[in-house]
Length: 417
Image (cartoon, rainbow, N blue to C red; front, side, top):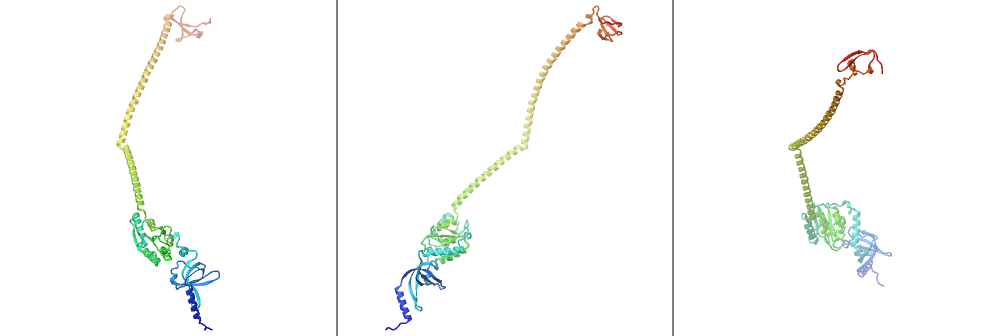
């Protein structure tokens, strides 16, 4: 019968057997009992429907973990089996952990995005406004990359008046996130008008430093307006969401930050033309007003008034003469008409009077007493008035007259025949 071995020996033999047999394992399971230790180590278990195994990821490997482990999360682990001999416990020593069905970087991106969104890093109301005419721009980027040359070229053509301050920064690899964060803090202390944080294109791993929380914090805490310009149009990083403005590329960041000098030249040309047109219109209006005032002044001057009065006098004289001549002619015509009428009237009157006179003469001649001296005929008068026999009464004193004699008689008898 063999001699018994010690517990330590047994555990040592088991440790040697397991660690040499399961040198490389690749296992899938669901996280439980998760603990992030102050030392930087991560302790947890993975399980399936029937079993559980303890796991540990030491600090040296944990610092390369791109995402945050969470209870209930399904993961794939690459590692090996190790045994803790003093307790006889075996566990899975994790070298690399990937989320099951999803890339680690994609999951880390979503986790950090949700975390920062919950903290209010992406709120539109906290975004700072870019100045319209920046005089000084800080560039947080690599001094050797193509991005800096592209930005300088665009700036030269777009707005050469701007001053750039380059903050040489490590933009990929180990320690790049820490360096970007420090560069942002330093640039923020330079009192620049705008800060551009970015780099040219690359793989997601190359750009990953701009997805780190330390960079997001530096951008959020900066007082200077920041444009995030990382990668290409299709690349969206955490820095894009936290920054005040996102640019598709570093060149696009310059286009956003700077005004277009050609547009301003055209604008100035338009303003100059508009100014000249308005100035010419004002001069033309003033000239027209001056001409009108001059004309009005001339019209209302003493000389003009005298000339007007003189012309009025001449016109009145001419009118008076014309009227006078017309009146004289009219009066003359009236006089001629009157003379003609008067002559005709006088002639008619004279003719009529002559006719009457001739009639009276004829009557007189016919009734002349000398021609009435006939036997038996006398003229009867009373009180020197010739009367007829019809007016005589008995006792009247009458006179019987003939051309040669007057007889005074008293009527004693009066008989009607």
